[in-house]
Structures are given as C-alpha cells and as structure tokens.
Length: 199
Image 1 (cartoon, one colour):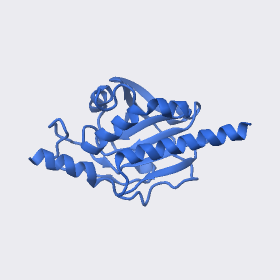
Image 2: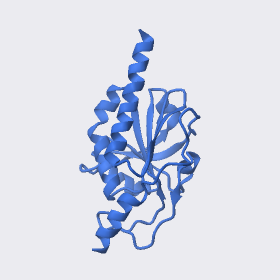
Image 3: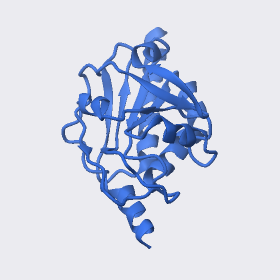
Image 4: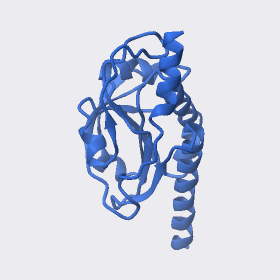
C-alpha cells in the first residue's frame, strides 16, 4: 500500500505550474548529456539535434513512475508523427544513466523509440528555470525500486532551429498525455508555417 501511495503522489505532485520556466521567445540553453535509446548509451547535444529540426525537450520527475510512464509511452506511440513534422524529442530527468538504459528499452514505456537523457545533478533543468525537488527518503518507483535522485518539474519546451523557445508546456491542470498532445500540435504548427513560408 505504501508503494502505491508513493507512486500516486509522484505521478501528481510534480505537475505544478511552470511559473518560472523559460518563456517563449527566449534562447534555450545549449546542453549535452549522456542519454539512452533502446538501452544503448550515446551523447546527446542539443545544438546537433537542432541542425535537423525543432527539438522537444521534456523534463519529467522520474522514470518508472505513474505519470512519467504514461508520458513516455504516449511520446513513443507518437514518435512517427513528431518525425513527420521534422522534429525530434528528448526526455530529461535526474535518473542515472543505468536507470534510463532500462527505461528506454522497456516496451511498455520508451519502447526503444524515445531517447532519454540523464541530468543527475539537475543543472540542465535549472538552466531552463524549472523547479527541482530533492529526493524523498523511502520513495519507490513502479517496480518497487528505491528512487534515490531528485525530481524536475514536469515541463516541456519546444525549441526551434534557431535555438529559441517556441512553446513552454506545463501546469497543474495538464495531464501527461495532454502535454504530449500539445507538444505535437506545436511542432505540427511550426511545420505548417514553414511549409507556407516556403511556398
């Protein structure tokens, strides 16, 4: 029962309004991080990803917790749509790369389609001006494994190729699935605008 309560709390407690997060129109901080896709580690660099198109940078509290599991699953299910709009997606959390190797490969969540990056010290999250919370003793993930890291507020940024924030998506009233839907809607709008501008 204790584990269920902890997981439910974690699923909802870090969906507070992104009041201090970077606003649309400002430059997104460049960052590099150790990341994982389908259980294989690689180095993610935002500046390199932006060369190919807009990037959805989404911060989430922890791998293997209710809301984060749902959000990762929804992103993974929609990756083809993001790619069709010319965009890529990177999830960022304070999970260790070891935890993310398992999460990125798990068929129920990232399913080998969604890359996730480790921000173990919370520096990347803080550079985007989002809240970071300390680890809570005794909290376990949906597998029953201890969570020994801090948590970033659930907030998503859509970054355009010129490095500017096009949208900041978050808030207490927004579910993890709505977060993904809004992110997809934003990149599709960007793609539509680019197509119109080109002819």
